[in-house]
Length: 133
Image (tube, rainbow, N blue to C red; front, side, top):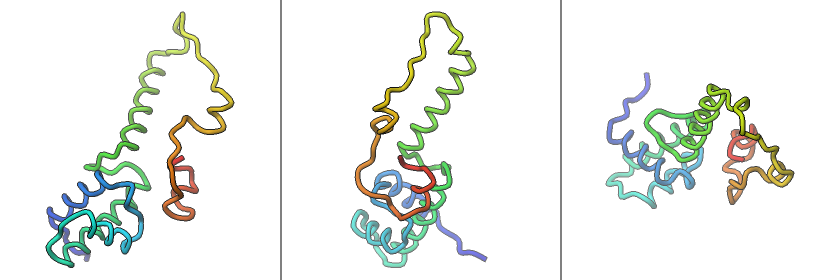
């Protein structure tokens, strides 16, 4: 059987992920050092438990949205999906006086301008499958 994580560990981990998502990785040892820098945690054991749960949640976030964690990237994706569903429900393409423009070549080459700076968090994995473009 697994260990029980207290409410303190879960709450602290979620807050750290929401604020410092860009600094965190899928590696426990890296997350442990990040947690040590950004938070004042009284014991080494508690710090390690928080870092371990952060690593666990980061792996779940890579697979899809996680309940209880609000990250701007997830919110934008959810909003985009909701808008698309709403427009298709109204049959937006068939409305009069509405013209759909084709995408520019420049947009197709470089995405929509939301390029992230820096390298991949890891070689392969989520970045290779098409996430975080």
